[in-house]
Image (cartoon, rainbow, N blue to C red):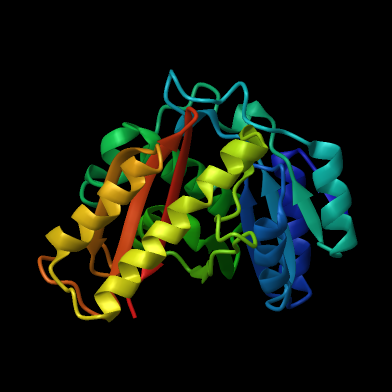
Length: 276
Ligand code: PAF
């Protein structure tokens, strides 16, 4: 497994794989890898040579967010990736974003959901993802669906810039209690983590209400928000949207998605579930 921090070396390796006629997959991460990430990597390994990037991207954190405290574990990450037989771990140094003057900004999808609560976040995400895609030039790039809005934004960016990369979604991996896996779950103590599991349970109960015939979004949202508040979450939003995130739905339909962001014990959690 190659471990690379230098941009030129990353490009050289990519060219070498290409000259060998290999397909290339990229899995961008911010490290502190958990089973959700490793599941994404396992998917990517089916599609050719795999680059996993690890970079805690300062551009996507707001001034009062957790950039400094974001969990980091380079040694542990490298070991996990070695065991999976990844071809390259690319860990760019901070020059990849330092003094950056050019940004990718979306003018539609960023203005809703998480974008309303994290100004500048998606600009930071799109900018680093564009940089990584330019360096690695993969055939496939993989993103977990817990960050559903991020996935939609990246897919749209790749389409709008006619990029030769297929953006590959990977389903959410959940802990036994339903909590979506996330590096930020490490911030919780045992009791808080038990409480955090209620987010998925409530989204799932909302989905079951829909299944029983309640289709008015306002009612479904009202149910979810009340339950979340009862379980001590601070609710940023619960929305029901079409799967491309174009519109809020008045009447929910099969295939739509419920998306939510909440805070618990100062930790921000996002999750989503498809209506079926
Ligand atoms: O989902 C993440 O971990 C990050 O937003 C990403 C895509 C690696 C960009 O920094």
